[in-house]
Length: 492
Ligand code: V55
Ligand code: FE
Image 1 (tube, rainbow, N blue to C red):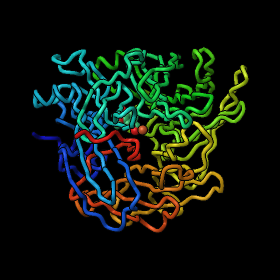
Image 2: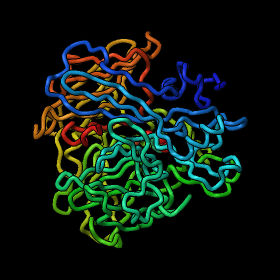
Image 3: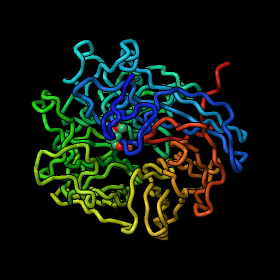
Image 4: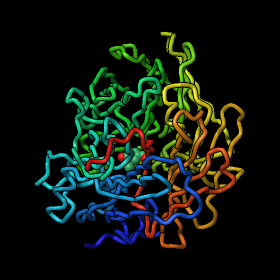
């Protein structure tokens, strides 16, 4: 099997990876099982749970003429670190959905480019083409692997075997898609999510829904976006649901038929925040215009009376240079692309047309992949996390919105971090009291990976434990922590 070696081409370098390729040459392709990883330092005795990750991992090089496809189209590869009694097992498995199975049988790529079914091999026209490669979540005894253009895949939480490559919950959802960024209701533990392009390719329908802990759809509504755009994440408070529509837009059927890219940055379009009440029929949605931005991840959000606040990381313009622009004036601008913490606020009460407000916070710090203590989705929160850099150097950043103070964990030279996940120190620990877990790859060791455990309240002290893999970890976009007491019993 031969992958293109030119940096930037799909899967460049294959399993060996190449410096400079997208996702740091993290194409991996190999499933791993490693019992009892080597550990430096001390894993806290009572730390019990599993850290799940997923990322795009090209199963096969693209057919001739489609090598330009972007890294986002790599097949989903899930992995986990199970931590218990100071022991750690590592496991990685492909998301074996219908697309993976078909290609596995054919021993070649059958699907064309990212989110363009017109480029598929005739043998798979109209077939399931999803790659659940963006985020993992735990729900009702299953790990969900998710990509925003399809329904999730359901995986076994202990073995990562694919239980259902196109998981439909109770079969009641009206949406054909499911975001990679669902939320947990901090009061009920229900799963909150949405799907955009919910009724088909290029549609402006957004389906928004709530699923209870047993997988039952207990609420859903369908709303219309002002135009079809990438809605990568959203925000949901105790009372409101908020969608950010930015000008990374669907450029139309004609372009798709010519083999074009699903998205293009079109700055002639407006930026909107859509705000609606939870639990209604969606008819109350208001689309408020505001300054141009592109924000991909929600750090936190809350409702205070009629005011709604949403913190996200993002830039003033396109952050994804691999999505071209239809306008010559819209060339990718790395300065405008720089991500910072932004606080959006809007008055959800008034019925008059008015803009939303956006202000940049912590202006000296830049980065992306914002997270929070996941127990605080939907409610006021104090601590936000991001990967990036600032006056304290580069690394994992913790923002304390109460004091305005920023702490930094720096991994040292020749080391690069993936997104971290916050782990409560124990059940019921106060917000922010716990650990940050995440992957660190060592450039001078051919990208070999460590899983780091950092005390979230002593980030400058370095990792309390370093879990050493003898190889590069499977690729990752996002990761998710599941406390051990929530996992189902291991089957005998
Ligand atoms: C993102 C990632 C995707 C995607 C859309 O990080 C957005 C943002 C890995 O796939 O399809
Ligand atoms: Fe994301």
